[in-house]
Length: 148
Ligand SMILES: [Zn+2]
Image: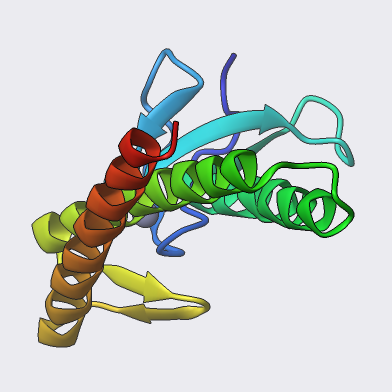
């Protein structure tokens, strides 16, 4: 799989890389170090779209968590099963934030929603993400251990 564009734009930091430069459909951004992967473009034939793995994972998680909450509300999930899915979601979300935060600390590029920062405030935000990410990982992990 090859990306045909001479320049590839990172969907995370909006920076331009000089092409994809990897034989694999997944790599990290040359600039911000966030994980990226290629997907065939559904609108343009023979074109590939670059997606940010962290963003996609978060978008995929929302309906999963919402689905667990709804089925718990409707009585389809036991309290234990619901607590387990919340703990697992917390753990996974924390891992994503730790990944995001440590990449931001390394490269000095951070993004919250659509706002990209590239200075001291980016590193402060990345440090906060890493800290809160680790906290969720610990809480989620404890939750999974405690709820049997
Ligand atoms: Zn990037």
